[in-house]
Length: 141
Ligand code: SF4
Ligand code: SF4
Image 1: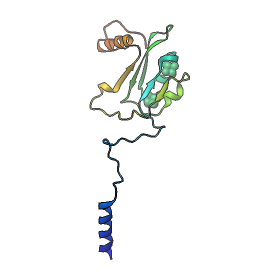
Image 2: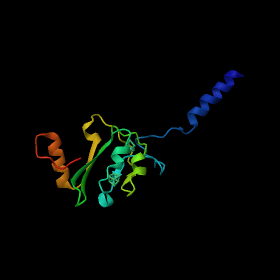
Image 3: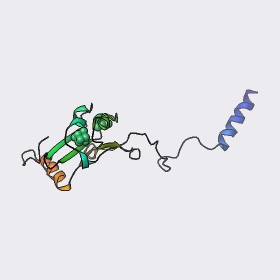
């Protein structure tokens, strides 16, 4: 009796469609509420620093280039982020959102895990200053 049951299970297993997905060959849509990579929309940003202050993982830097002109550079350390969404809640200008589509964030080194957003010229100045701390500061944090 037991042997018959085992044979039945074995044959069922051979003909049944696998329950697992063939990721990464088949990529399913993630649930819309999934918290993936953080995005910054600079349009309304006031540089208030609330997002950075409230981040429990020290994953955000807001670098002020020119406060009056509302020019900022936003740095996001993906490798520190816990995807808690506190920054999204803290920003009263709705500048921050978390992508439900960009969630494949693993990497082999930490360098590419820091994303820098802002005007191209400002980003270049901030990165140059980080590479050479004796260089002219790009702004104040
Ligand atoms: S909380 Fe919002 S407005 Fe304030 S610095 Fe962060 S992104 Fe900009
Ligand atoms: S999601 Fe959480 S950990 Fe990630 S940057 Fe925002 S506040 Fe920090």
